[in-house]
Image (tube, rainbow, N blue to C red):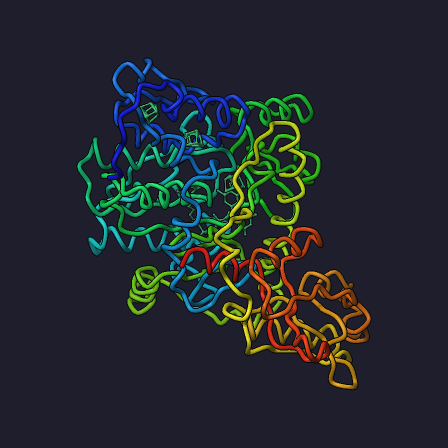
Length: 504
Ligand SMILES: Cc1cc2nc3c(=O)[nH]c(=O)nc-3n(C[C@H](O)[C@H](O)[C@H](O)COP(=O)(O)OP(=O)(O)OC[C@H]3O[C@@H](n4cnc5c(N)ncnc54)[C@H](O)[C@@H]3O)c2cc1C
Ligand code: SF4
Ligand code: SF4
Ligand code: SF4
């Protein structure tokens, strides 16, 4: 536990900042971490809002907890990232990881119910049955409204089976984590949540909160956003004449599907994006970059999930389930389309979030959570110390189809292109390649779609110089050239490298 310094100032009570910046500004995603972590039990989620039950400043002179562990505050981010930063691969779209595989539950009945690979359910059921953990935090469906998640402490396999499938509204899973510790006395807990839920738990870990020692493993879901429950259901009632009690399920494919007893209506995501919570618009994490194991869809493959294994704990547990015949796996390198879709979705989410954050800062005078801020620590680091020197390049006459296969095999998402003289002549990323229509990919060369403007750095510059240049040029990477020979490419630095440096 961190040491608190005594003070009489009311402004040192974190709740005041939490209320102003997060709750009243509409950035709360109702994870419940503040309620679980509050030392005076002052906070409580009721309806779609966090309430303070009494004035905690009467008991405490100073308390930073609820604001610091809130996933939408800027506190503790780099320390939270350090829990996964020993993984061998760091990818600017997907974060740190050890392996990516396609996976599915061996049991076909589970796959039928989940609309995906049912990997999460199969892993949790296996973990409870083998006593690898003693409980799991899941989001079941509210009996009277099956689309509404009911955060729960699963103690037996049936509790896990009744949580199968995704619910696209906020779930207070971190609050349920608190109940598992305080209410049920559980000591080895598995946790399932979207990226901001996982971030809240990592922040508690960074804070060394007393309840975090009971966490055994985190499974993070991919996430494009969650909807405001009251606002989306009201819209569906008005526009489609479907009452909340008539909705049997919701499902995300290329469109948003709403299922009733006799019908399925398909709604384009663009039609309902106004109902997505404000925090989701500035959220840069698509794949739950801080979890032990991340799980998401594997579009266009039916029945499969994509699994990103990030930590050693995640790897050991996942492969135990594979060895014991619970999970089937398949190599993602054989399915470049799946990899392409995930990377593009992650990059698009990040780019949109960064744009939106600039706008929101103007409105609120406060920038919601961003993983890398300008920091003086970067001024002490020379680019030559952190640049990647083992650079992979691609020839400018490589076709887009060949390039997409190349990306799936090598896991980086952007590469310098080299002209016929062997000199760097531009930069091509998976995002640009995947925007080429499928039927034109064999006939289009990467040289035709590459960005010709290179953002350049030199080895003797500081990481802060380069970070500023990245921000000015709205790019996540620079090429490092030899000052004496400006055509000689020495290395590459990405924003992820800068973050990695700070976590160290
Ligand atoms: C809000 C949301 C948005 C998502 N967006 C995307 C996306 O854009 N692209 C993509 O590829 N995948 C997305 N996913 C993940 C995807 O829908 C599946 O959850 C994931 O692929 C795991 O599939 P599975 O078959 O292994 O899960 P299952 O075996 O069906 O298990 C699902 C688990 O998710 C948990 N859960 C359900 N709803 C919630 C919730 N609201 N909050 C926290 N936990 C919950 C349940 O406890 C359950 O254990 C999203 C999920 C959610 C909840
Ligand atoms: S006592 Fe609870 S509500 Fe008050 S500042 Fe601390 S964590 Fe927040
Ligand atoms: S910790 Fe969670 S519930 Fe509390 S204010 Fe932040 S997002 Fe909302
Ligand atoms: S998009 Fe981000 S903030 Fe929104 S629910 Fe998903 S993880 Fe949380």
